[in-house]
Figure: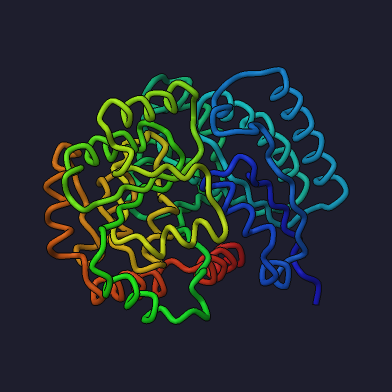
Length: 370
């Protein structure tokens, strides 16, 4: 039996952000390739996190190259389905709008199902800025299937009604503890009478809240708490401010910065963490993978009520804040109520039931077949 042809146009690493991580997994999915005859095209625009949203002649070249690659794939591959990771605003939106004309013309010649996967939020804000933005966005999503990360993001599309339907595709992350004795890991962490390890692991973008965690470290520097930070910097100025604050407040024994981590270093940070803190107000935040990773290691979470975070966490796996000024109060509650083996086991069970890569893969294929 002939398999349907699937053209996937998606972000991949680098830079290392949520959409790219998901794209990396989709491109390596054996199950997807078993169900469809696949071809993959990478959306290349930025080399680092700091480059995102900035204009350059190099990006113009990438847009032209992407346009030609998609055109050639439509002519030679002739897909039955197209999966596309779409952007919401700025230059990236107009890039996506331009290349979408290719499959709009193609759909006049051959029946094709289009799926736009949104990894961020902000559609409502963008279309509310002007009638032009609303018109172009309605044209962009006309007759396509929208994949959102959770039902909490559906209100973002309340003014845009030209799409076919909305489906939900929660993110998943790798279970790096598979085959490892989780109970033994917990026993080692909670039987020791040493320090409490608090972890912030994400891109070092100020609106994601790392500086709030740093200020929290200063407030609690007389307690037996060590704060671990890991991630890549958005700017050199932010990096300097971070280390200047550490020096000015004598936090060298309280704060450890690990830089960008992956593999074994990342696993060790999560294994040793008692609490994960992520007080984000990042405008593009939609479904943070770092919170899923924390749950996979049995680490409870303090986070803000941004986007889909209340969908990911419940009151047994963490604390969801609507006011970041209450971060120190939340820490006090967490150290009293969430620091136990029982809570850690619940966090991991929540991950296994809802947010594994296998569940993401299965849900994606179900959507694409629908």
